Structure formats: C-alpha cells, structure tokens
Length: 257
Image (cartoon, rainbow, N blue to C red; front, side, top):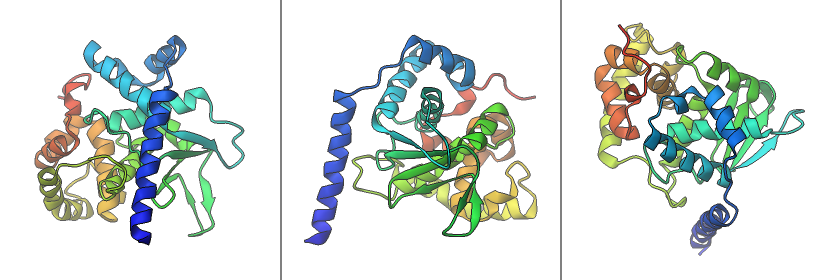
C-alpha cells in the first residue's frame, strides 16, 4: 500500500509540473534571444527549423525548473537560468518532450562548495533522492568559455541526471531506447580500460573512475568536439548518436582536419 502511495505521489507531482508548464509558461523575450545568441554558440549553429525547436524546448525547461541560490549567492539571475536551461535543452535535444522532469530544482553556488557529507569540495552534483541538480556558477562558466577542451560542467552534471533519469520510471518520461542503451553499455568496459591504459587520450582520466563518470565525460566530448571524438573512437561515438538521438557533427563549425 505504501509503495503504491509513493508511486501515486510521484505521478501527481509529474502532472503538477505539466500543469505548471501549460498555465505558467515562460516566454522568451527578445533580450533573452540576444543573450542566447551572444553566449550560447550551439544555438547559433542551428538552422532556422532547429532553432525554433530548440527555443520551444528551452521554454519548456525554463517553465518547469526551480532555481535556488546557495552558498552566499544573492540571486539566480535570468541570464544564469537561461544558460543552464539552454544546456539542458542541448543535451536532451534529441527528444522532443524530454525535460528531465524528475530533477525539478537546480541549486546554484557561486563557486566550488564544501560538502559536509563526504568532506570534500564539489564543482557540481546530482541528487536523485531530492530531484536536485547542483551547479557551481564559476565552474559552469569556465566550461562555456572553452568549447573545444571536452570539459563542460553543465553537460557533465546534466549527463549524470539523464543517466539516472533512465532508471526512474515514475517521471512520465522515456529516455534511452533499450537496444541503443545495450549497444552503448556493451562498449563501456573496454573503453574505460583504454582510458586507463592511455589508448584513449581524448578522454581525461576522470572518465576511468566508473561507468557514471565515463558517460558524463563522453557526453562532454560528444557535444564539444564531435569530429575529434568520431575519428578517435568511432564505434563509441556512433553508439552515442543512436542513444542520444542526434549527431553533433551536423552542427560543428567545420570538420576537423
């Protein structure tokens, strides 16, 4: 009975979020679009139809996420909300309606923050129990400034959220297709070994820690330097194309020589 009540409560929360989106939809202003064009280069590389689709998804994300300042940050500005939500929209762009509904709240710290639970500093984290994505704004911006190093905190933490959401069946969303996930997962053990041995020099060492970190680092490279990724680890890259339902090479500025 308790389990049934839990699932009903989760389903009710999902419907409340749906109602919030339709009743209190966040509409993007011209100032928002100008800011997006200036600071989020992925958007600029889209064709007109894809831009329209991206903006629709971005409005959906903005309308259904709650942003809360932490660690001395006075407020989460409109610009912060816009760039964090745009990153969510980019990572989930292969799905028309997916918005990571389970992760309803985003906590924003000004810098890396100290965790009392494991006695260490964090740049970001994901908490599925409470539906939280946590971001250090300074580290998030650093990831945006260099688009070619395969290090992007926003993509990294949203990748963790996406992978965890795939294991949650009470959020009303469907993430990975079963066969695409199996194909990707079958490649992971060998690919982690190649990171450890140095054969895969494209991924930083953090990718070898476990399958969760590997996926997050893989998506950072998938979106930031798709042509390098494709040429270095073609089978893995194409598996991610199927899993993520998009191919970032389509929007890359130029094919790398």
